Image (cartoon, rainbow, N blue to C red; front, side):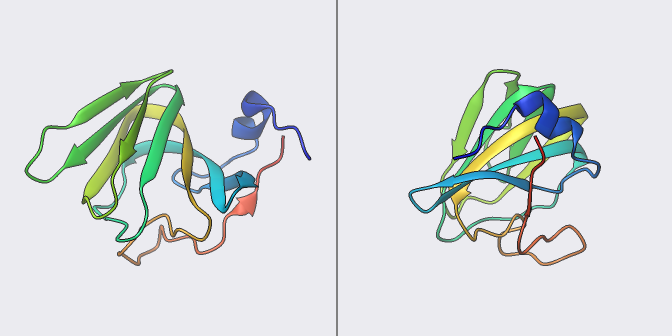
Amino acid sequence: MEKVTLSDAFESIDEQWDPHLAGELNGQAVKLAKAEGEFVWHSHADADELFFVTDGRLRIEFRGRDDVVLEAGELLVVPRGIEHRPVAEPEANILLFEPAGTRNTGDVENELTKEEPERVDG
């Protein structure tokens, strides 16, 4: 068991869109990331993805659906298979909850893809 202080953990993250592992439970991963600007359009064929904004604002864009804007303290679950693109303007701190081993860019591979997230400091 290891306590994580979110404010300290977010301070230890230097890069945008670089998820860090904060904990695992029942086959699920709790990840923290700083976000700014646009991420990539992607989907997760076999995994729902929870976005929880702890600070800032995050807009989740969907193809053929209305965008959803999340303020600090709000969350959204994106169902598996739904193509989406997170956009943070300005910066946002987000907590992600998804099955362990879920790749951050889902079905897309590019320079932002992180196969194995680092463990967070904090």
